[in-house]
Length: 266
Image (cartoon, rainbow, N blue to C red):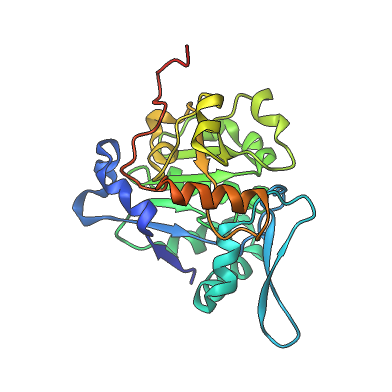
């Protein structure tokens, strides 16, 4: 059985979004299905990090050669053994399965009271078949909402004809991957990690503090920004930006964004 995880503090805030409340009727809840960071992310670049186990069984972080900021979930996997084990179990279980077996595993493991699923607080779509398994989950469960950030843009485009027809399967292209050029070329809704609130304003992007932008079907054509977060290597630009943002109290989920959707920069 796969291990779905209950909502964390960030995704739990989706309960307050009116548009999403029908998915949570009847005491349904928010869950995520997570995989091992980096290992399950075939197109990651700027955020590529992995929890590596040494010969003594101890975990440490390793960043990719093009890393610009450290993956938050990879840091979690180094710090927390239960988190590492759960995500590794899910990844090891799924990656050896054929499509129909993936669908069966995802479906039989899904909690009965799941109303909203963030596909991957950690991890990404590691193969075309795996993405299509989730597309099938959305087709099978139209009363539940599935949403995800992804850098696996080739897989999205492969199944776009299905994705575009589904109101309960919401994808966001995450900048910082190996195929970023595909985002503008194919007009994919996107999210960009920024190092300051002013950078988001300059780009004309609202900041999503709580996944309300990422999850809402009505916003599936609107780009947004995410503030740099997690544990960043000392002395890096990302670490300095993180320090500055924390000092300003920029991570409050009640904070009003500098730019709301529909507003003009003029």
